[in-house]
Amino acid sequence: HHDKLALPVGTTLDRFIMRKQEDFPYATGELSQLLRDIALAAKIVNREINRSGLIDIAGAYGNRNVQGEDQQKLDVIANVRFIRALRNGGEVCTIVSEEEEGMIQTGNVKGKYVVAIDPLDGSSNIDVNVSIGTVFSIYRRISPTGSAGNEQDCLQRGTHQVAAGYVIYGSSTMLVYTTGNGVNGFTYENSLGEFVLSHPTIMTPATGTIYSVNEGIARHYGAGMAAVVAYFKEQEFSARYIGSLVADFHRNLLKGGIYMYPATSKTPTGKLRLLYECNALAFIVEQAGGKASNGHQRTLEIQPQSLHERCPFFVGSSELVGKAEELLAAAE
Ligand code: AHG
Ligand code: MN
Ligand code: MN
Ligand code: MN
Image (tube, rainbow, N blue to C red; front, side, top):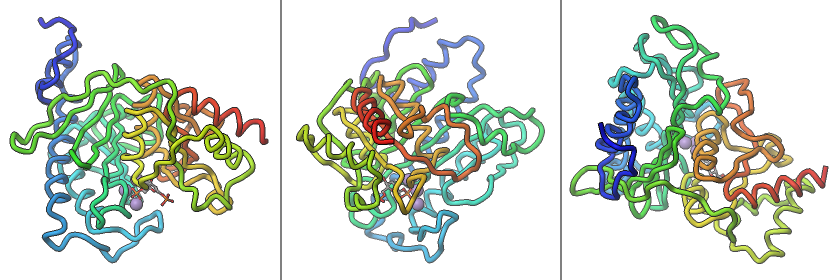
């Protein structure tokens, strides 16, 4: 039996997952297999993204998803790739995806897990070679195995996640995930075709000097949100906004800062989706010592009502999210 020592930088993701599993003598290895399936799909999607300028897979797909957004071809390709990997892997009974209105039944009725996924995050950045991502949440099903998963399995509070992570396809490609025991980041080594541990036990700074928000829509903010932005300007914070949630989140996680997608007069519940965007990042940021809320309630404690519901999102360094909550409450 191996010691529960931190594994060294350079450990491959497969080995890392295997070693972690050995820390839980009764673990069956199904979650480990599921994480490996996601990593495999991530490699395939990474390949498609890298060459998207060369083959005809950039641009619009010519269809609108349940969110009313124009799907990009890579949204559809990434969706297909992740669903296929999860179906073939066999551990997942049901998937909720940004790109499909209903629950996706994999046919693996014995699968113990449910996955919520944003297959391709940052659609508007695909065609201009700016970082994009994938976000995933994993839950244990509530319903007994032997039949398809149901809505109750999919609409669990974020506190029930057994694992969550994201992939960032950036200047390098990384996979960052947690199983509730700290956050670890792996960088993709192209020539080896492996994710390699590069960021062990990520902790986010308690405070920072970056704020990330779409200020072009500031005229639609309420008084509270206007006060929040005014405060960060008064403090002379740096404004950094990529427009890919995963990339904005990842930068702030490492450097310290706050990301905000508030409620606006046009979008009273904000834009981001609770199940496959906010909850995963909320789990990760808390595991890294940070904070996530909808402005007044901890994101992970929100009881989801529907598969594609949206919520305002304030995430990042604990002091900064706390400050935003304070200013929002004062304006009520
Ligand atoms: P997606 O590409 O998965 O639909 O997500 C888009 C989201 C998120 O990535 C990003 O942070 C946000 O939309 C940007 O919205 P605005 O353009 O309104 O700022
Ligand atoms: Mn979209
Ligand atoms: Mn997204
Ligand atoms: Mn998406």
